[in-house]
Image: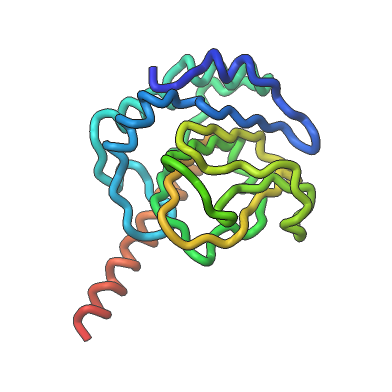
Length: 210
């Protein structure tokens, strides 16, 4: 497997002020090297559905493991949830823009959010996700997570699962994986992503034609 589920199981779940855990090394170093070599080449900011980007076989192995039964069972045990039959949704990012990082909670259609960072190193003050005690104060930090390759951040979505980061513009690789409440959630989200991609391509075509 590309995932160290034993390390995940041995990492305590934090419950204040919402359920979360951070697992550096969740994707082992040897797997990170291969996955990063096969990571989608994304030159623009935004989240892209995995079926809308091209990648190599080692990245596909990561996707297969994320959607596998061992992963689901490990998360069910950790968060005391029954995720049987709950759909999953996976998007991928390659760049961060000045608009990213604003404080928010995820939508209530998401059950668990999993972020897996795939950056070989991180030396910038911006772009490090902060779990927060406030929906308005970026300095109300519970913890800050450097987006270094192999690191997992997972949390149960709630009305106070606030998170955000200081502004950063540039390459920033992250795989975003969610269990969601229904298939219609996945369908709507994928339709929005595809529409956004289409409009960006259209704008690019018009700007080139001028």
